[in-house]
Length: 179
Image (cartoon, rainbow, N blue to C red; front, top):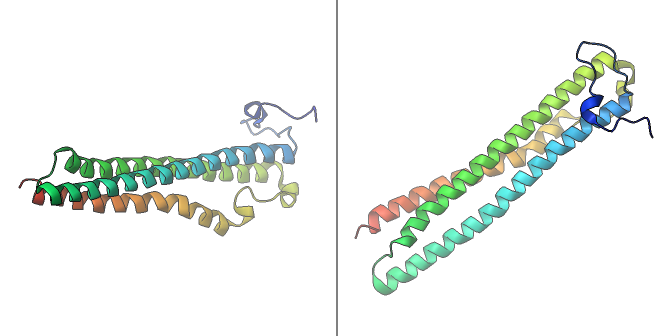
């Protein structure tokens, strides 16, 4: 296929409304590749968040366990451990929040690509529109929305967990750390 355009940026149709010189299949592939790229970003950000959260929850639990052991033996808290049980939730909150922002940005990009493709399809490929699958969700808008649900919600669940643990940590530090 030597006639296929190698650079997708050069393959975009003219913005002045002129008819596209690309076949509908080639143009569809360009849009679909961009959607797949954004979807990969969502997947990577969601997995990074989940992996980091697992490490942070483990670190938090280990710190609380050590804090309880030291307090049971000595009756006092070393300075660093109460600081850690406050700092770990702050880091978890920051990671989850930034992951959520990045995931939402990629989801908005996919929505924009879908809208742009639908406009292109209506303007240039109306006769061929039934030959191509939907750009997202297999053509079913409900599948598309449901596919976005988990990566959108998981970071918010982690945010809520870290807010609760952070509040408990600060309360414990204020209650016991000053003794």
